[in-house]
Image (cartoon, rainbow, N blue to C red; front, side, top):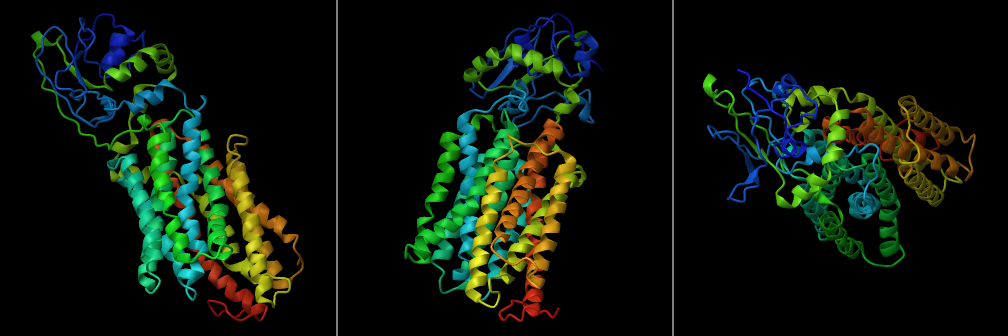
Length: 529
């Protein structure tokens, strides 16, 4: 039974009542959009219990229904339509996101700084563990890579199905705790390989969960592209910073590896402080669940009476809503129908899986470029040296190649606001990276180009890798429907981790093959080529 909607409504009344009705909407449009407002509706009256809810009363009150922690769902997406009430998120984060077109507006400097620092700190723990792999397990460096990557892969694969149940604040605190545990457990487990590998696993959990979380979190800010670029730039510099931390304090500074890790405990503290004090967290939603509840049907005599209970920010945010009233009217007029207001966090398991399967155009380039570049790092570059017979020469080239690579990564990951790759270019860069893998393999096997100028090509490898990383995410944020960007960013982040996992295996085999060709001892796996 359709509810009667009549009478003119002021813009502020529509905002306070949580409706998404343009100024010139007809009666039928208001009905289709789930509006249940009587003709004499007035501005809301604050409920006395400080619950943050308001009662929008009509002629008489017959039924009151309210549900907390829900998102704005279009009634037609509910099988119980028209007996479902269109509800608004408690913190109105989606409404705020609509008030500013995040793809065209600028972002506050504090948020850009926060994303950069969070990206740097998030990845530096992972890099420190990799840089100290020889100290952790001299005869099993591959185990350190495995225990650092595999937990990250697990959390990224599963995250899209449970992230919405845990707030960003809670995830950040958990990530900081895991980072702190990783440093302390490894530092105090010098005589137990199992304990040290457990600490490495904590590092993998932290970096994997928080990378997916912060990438997704950028969708709530005014300019996701700028936030993603700052995050990517910070992660790019973390590669250099992590190695510099270990080299500066342990190798050159003379501190023990234990002391180096214990001093790194400052990073988890910085992690939390930046999130809480620098980043504008008011834009972020609370943990989200969504339940539909039926509204009892009214008799024909009372069909003109309806009550909507709506969640709003509270008195402080009312001023912000009033100031942005005109901007909201303009945005709503440009937005597609309200069916796109559906929040992807409320999707079921099968629906999410089907949606994630459509993200291959972003996941495959990430996985491919990381597979190629990490195969070079773990396998090919370790078999190059001038001369190749010298262990010290091979180690020198490997370190120099890694530094050139990290410099390229930092530069390209910082270019997201200057250059946006199209789909064809995004697909071209991984293909070029695979060609460079073939090139370096032939160099290591035949020595047809064998001098320090190869470092220029290593720099290009970093440019391609960092370019795919930042452009895949920024392109996604522009092409995916706004209601699904958060889920998509979290899901696509699994691509680089999958690539690294396969690269670790391929690199061991390729290293053994190249060592065999050059008659070098010490390969992790004996392969005859």
